[in-house]
Image 1: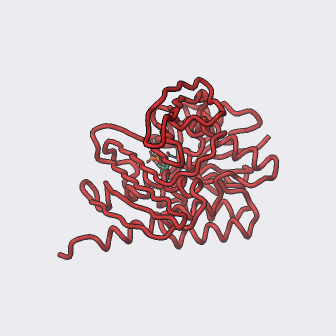
Image 2: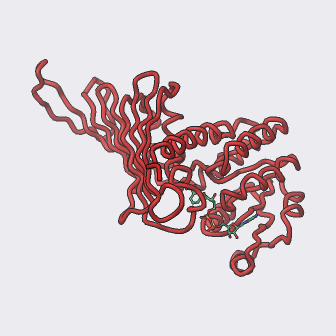
Image 3: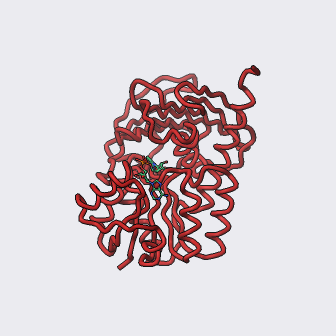
Length: 325
Ligand SMILES: NC(=O)c1ccc[n+]([C@@H]2O[C@H](COP(=O)([O-])OP(=O)(O)OC[C@H]3O[C@@H](n4cnc5c(N)ncnc54)[C@H](O)[C@@H]3O)[C@@H](O)[C@H]2O)c1
């Protein structure tokens, strides 16, 4: 049995609690949250012990799940790691690069398992493509959300775009050559909407748009690679492949012919079967498996750090593009 404690039971923390409660091989010890009104309700609704201070909870756990606001991630990670306990920390890893660097150092020195909550890596629409070799040369991403004050303690880059940065860095096996970016702070003091172009040394170009001030939600990634287009809808949990027919048939493939300058080509269209999975359960289960089997976590502290590093380069570019007052 792995004993787990949760720090922060606000909006996302309650989803974490539901998943921990449903997981075999895990004992949910309790939670720590300084916000009385909400914490008292959670204690009652979930029949779960509320701890008066984080230290007492950590000492009874094997692992702690940090779902507190991002500015609190560093001090909470530090506390847990220094006690030699495993950490699951929500994305982004921290607020600043200095904090992120220190978390990486502490985790490496102590040898604990650390996983960062880049949940989209476990999105079933992406998992549906795991048999496909993804080698995009052009990536177009739109991640749009309606305005919500939650999460606005950091910019839209660290709040939303970081999901796509993490996926792209994990997908494109090449170093970044250049970044150009522009963004505007509309509702908060930091960029709420941004457009970013990342060029990789292998020639791949990623064009990302993120907004937290849109009228409707969208989370789409479109990949263009040799002979194929792949669409991933993270929100609707759908995937689509359109490719030149090349022998091996995709499940449920539909074919039609077109005339091209080099003759007749057969196009294949398929919608891979998306597993009916809960991404949060999968990511938390993967963290527990890494502890039990003593194997690396799938999204470790370096992945969290590298995504933050790119996010911070983007923020610097946006800053430089601001008009001088
Ligand atoms: N993976 C995702 O897709 C995703 C989605 C939303 C939020 N998040 C991340 O989850 C984290 C929490 O977001 P949220 O939307 O639940 O915020 P929230 O404000 O709804 O909840 C945060 C909770 O943490 C508590 N808290 C504050 N300081 C604390 C401390 N020192 N120790 C313990 N608890 C403390 C607050 O009282 C509150 O109940 C953020 O880092 C956010 O970036 C990730």
